[in-house]
Image 1 (tube, rainbow, N blue to C red):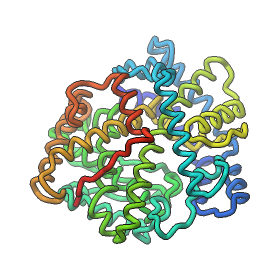
Image 2 (cartoon, one colour; image 1 turned 180 degrees about the vertical axis):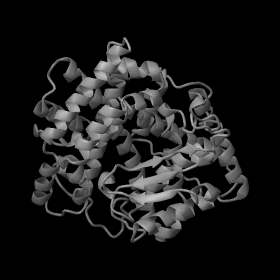
Image 3 (cartoon, helix red, strand yellow; image 1 turned 180 degrees about the horizontal axis):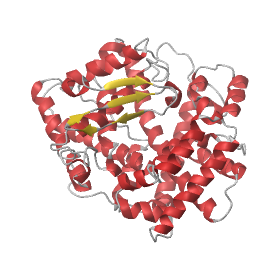
Length: 445
């Protein structure tokens, strides 16, 4: 059974959980307000509102995790993780990776680095959970979360379309329907029916936590378009095969994020070299943070199923453990808070179990792909020859849809063999390294 088959098998439990999720406090309260609340007292007050428990949602979440365990048992697997890993043929031992001393040292060093950077920016002596999002005003710094490039949803989409036009994908992008829907999660909806593509990109400002028109908001649109482009690169799509390999579905989309965020196109829009220098540094740090966030959520998901198996699935104990993990990954002061904000991520957990692995793998492989693509360039992206090179490179892992293999993804990224646990650990350590920066110098569009 493939991941896409599991996705469809758990449709009813997922829809029940998402119905509770959309109606909950966890979905309606957004972290984006914390970007600009200058007074620490008010930041703390709002954070504690965001981090409070949603009892009905928690109850439905427990039911969902219990039902996933039942599905695994029906498949004659002793755990949800073994059920999913078997379906994905995942060769990486994630549980073992989290326990390795090298990994733990890597996370500890990243937390120290993150803490030091944030304390310097905040001009504070201590680093609290509610300080994580706040961006102090600084005219010299281009903030990814607050810097606006467009004033509307339509304007944001237009910029994303213009970027993809420079990359040679305007024909595909012109046929996508773009919708802003605050009652649903953000996603790309691909569909091949009666010989035609019917593709939609749905964006929710509430779900994202990024305000319309900001750099990060537009980056997400670029990401979702990336999913559509990969689908449309399938040579012979059918109604049974119109999606990429599920376990590696995020690789190409995140790769397009890198291309956009480091592009001459974006640099020209910002139109300030000093601001752009600071912007690139913030983006490099954001990439580290994105990987750390995904690893935290993956480790937490293991803990949630462990609690279920041990009959200790209690709201406050899970919330306290979540806070402890956040302190470990980010370097917050550990005040023994009950942080229920993990419930805001239930849309990820509900897609199908341990989908978070896909984001960790995609972040790692998208970096490999970006640097491999750099070696193939003959000039600025936007030139016809380089756009053809990009399309041909992506076809290696896209032309067969769900039948493309992990090895074909590895080859697309310039690797000679499939990923191993050892490779994953080394790659995570490299990205989170506090002594070596990943300079994205490729000139795009």
